[in-house]
Figure 1 (cartoon, rainbow, N blue to C red):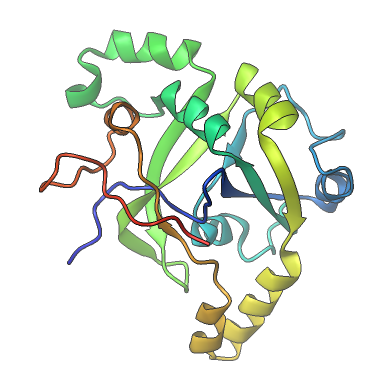
Figure 2: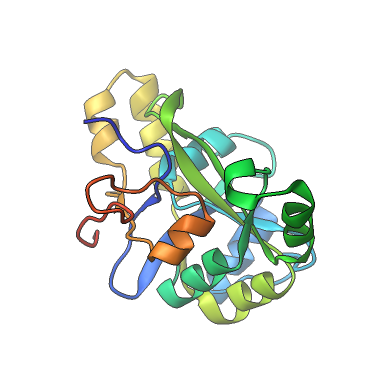
Length: 213
């Protein structure tokens, strides 16, 4: 059965969801030490969080791209995550969803959260036919993220490097075994509609699976 085109897959529990970001050591190491984002992290810039581990690996090149040498696993509150999604605007105009372009443009300018659906990635980082959600936080959303939503910050760079070396050695099975377990995140109907997420044709609801690890 094909994977729905647009759904959020993530590692989550009853009260938190894991997102990923990659930074230079100058930003990542102080954040890990403090358990929250501190200077030189800049709140006045849009910060993108990614629930998909493999999309983060595509973006940072398995922690090899300049300025993205440290990969962070960040557990944030589900309340905060859904606050962001409920106030998000899609980065690209969708005629069926937004009606007219001027309405979408106004929403884009005023929303503190921007989202986009990008091709999900395989273990070898090739594009897959279904999409993965990226969430961009700005203004009030960044402040809430830093001050209220972050529960824990973990540097998972050693695991990323281990998977990268296993792939280089041709050991795909061992590499895949190191990946975090991700399940479909059950979005409330109103949020799913606003994000243009795929719906389960049988129920009219966003696809749902039991909570992940």
